Length: 314
Image (cartoon, rainbow, N blue to C red):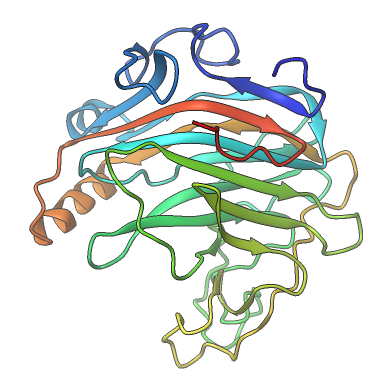
């Protein structure tokens, strides 16, 4: 696989920490485990564990249990296939796996509520969300230079607009595909994301998601149908607000204004914050569940490539 020209990065964790830029060894929250009965394939896998006690003991009350890799080669299109396993019932990460496109001098870290420059970079997270019954599924959470604000119903920052919140804020645009099958806990799930940077001056950028090789959604120019309200693109039938407009075809992504901005980084990042973690624990208890106060996520068989990868043939 390392010699395949389409592969930008891969790690099955069998050789230790050597393929990641950071960390380079086990941390308080990330450990390489050696257990063939638990691994997806081979004998090694990555374990992320963050507890309520860990968060309470942290001075900043948040923890980013994260690996990171900057690829040797950047690309205009990127497919990322990895396996993940949610262990038991526990709070979900506030944010999860991140993918970034960047110029040489730009970094996506620490830029919440910031519109990135079109010639600097853009990024998106694949996050875990939960419904009122406790079922979990996936959504995209994206930042780019033409992202929408949560200030106005139409996503603008125009004072006096319909629904004016009085303050400009940009906390990511949300894309939550409808009709997903719930994520199964205590099972390895094959997840694949595709991202395509736009042609400069056009809105032909794309995002797509597959779970266990089944297509979940493909956001591109002209598809799917949906409705923008503030900073969220709603699938038909999922927006219950009176201000939600009629569905129309998605306009596509104008992610960048420079060809120097290309995909170059990925992070397995379980980000958690104490107050949100505790609220999630309480919601799960109110649903009659008995959640663990430790959130554990396992990872294995990560591949980043310029072509579709698909799940392993077992």
